[in-house]
Image 1 (cartoon, rainbow, N blue to C red):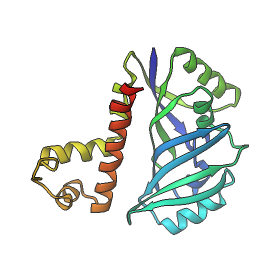
Image 2: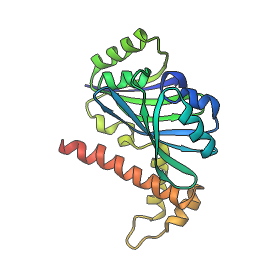
Image 3: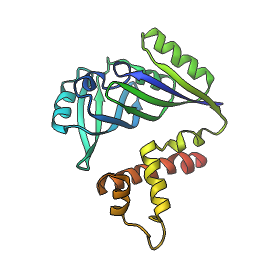
Image 4: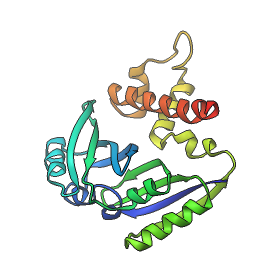
Length: 216
């Protein structure tokens, strides 16, 4: 039976700890973490700070091999980071036990992380890895589920859920639409580009975790 758990993790034990110590005003949201062989590649959104300063600090981060900007929506950007192979942290524990990052956001100091584990045994292996590598975290809650696709709001983050639910209630999805993207953005207090990005990421997560999951 799969297990979903929520943790609070210090920045230095998860991702971008060195960078976030120097630019704590930047808000980070993990889009996904790709794992191939032993390489861990995080994709994340950044907002709330000066991007030039953030990117300069990120380039100097000793755990970072390289940075690519994938999308720029003015008030937020999507990045892909190549991690140095000798970097260690809880994100490596996640890859070791075949867990999935459902949600991860940083407040500039700590990370709030939700993980999906294949079973109880993988949770134990995760704890052993963390203990062996002297990694710290605080467990906030843990649930078992026979239907993992139902957890984490189908992998939708709080911001994506807010955008999708608000769009639905405003009639954005009606044909013809009862609200425009601009009106939705105004209601959410964000730019049109940011609203569009949240909706599309939310669509993607819903399809992957609600529909593709059933097919597989």
